[in-house]
Image 1 (cartoon, one colour):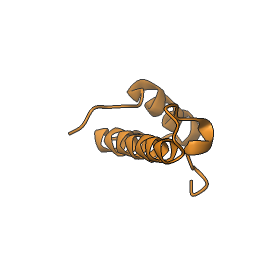
Image 2 (spheres, rainbow, N blue to C red):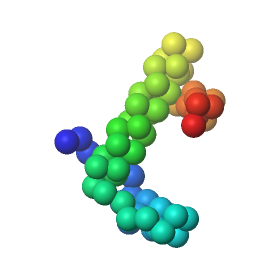
Image 3 (cartoon, one colour):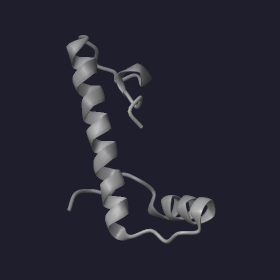
Image 4 (cartoon, rainbow, N blue to C red):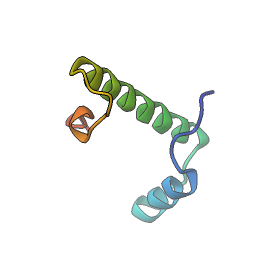
Length: 64
């Protein structure tokens, strides 16, 4: 299990308020893994461009 990168209480609150559903611990881990993957892709793109700063344009969320 890797480090949690999302605020669990805020995710649970959002899901509860928007859908009336409970949130499993597995959901939090999947979201954290997705954030990690998005960040890594941003790092990869920034490095490819010769940058040391990840910018919003380096994070592609068009598929979401």
